[in-house]
Amino acid sequence: MFGLFCFLLTVLASSFKSKSRLEAENAALRHQLIVLRRKVHGRVRLTNNDRWFFVQLYRWYPAILRALVIIEPETVVHWHLRALIRQMSIENPLWGAPRIHGELLKLGYEVAQSSVAKYMVKRRGPPNQGWATFLLNHLPEVAAMDLFVVPTIGFDLLYAFVIIRLDRRQLIWINVTANPTAEWIARQLTEAFP
Image (cartoon, rainbow, N blue to C red; front, side):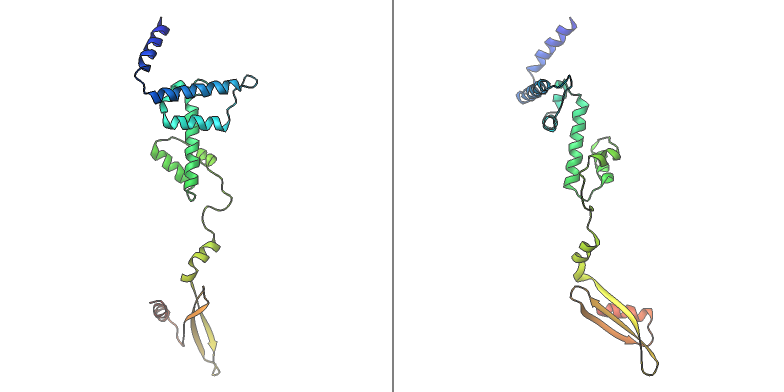
């Protein structure tokens, strides 16, 4: 009796559902039948295309979770989360697992940071630029300086201060003093780079 009552309520409720939602439920049910026909040795085998289909259908119509029979609804949500983690790691290559984990927590997904690291896209190189790339990018603004001792014929010591721009190996500044102080070096720097 209770089953008949539930069936009548379902038939009544289906008349109020949108047509696209009914079509989505029908597509989910049809795809489940296709998967069940492929069953090998009593076990259902899902391919990545099947998972992608259910995740996309869930994105468009979250209500299809009630129509799923061969898959737990939580499994589809986990697949969706896995796809979201991969998408975030592809679109933000400098983000690591802690950052993506924090963004998922802001969106309301309770997931461990180790799970985020597990499902991120693996990269071959380092996620940020190395020293060689950094130096090539900033070479026009990089300069080298040196303060060295020059002995004279009269056995006096003079101190030479030299600044060279690294990109063109161009001499920017040179000055000599007998008594170098911190103030003198600071003044030379401000005169070389006004």
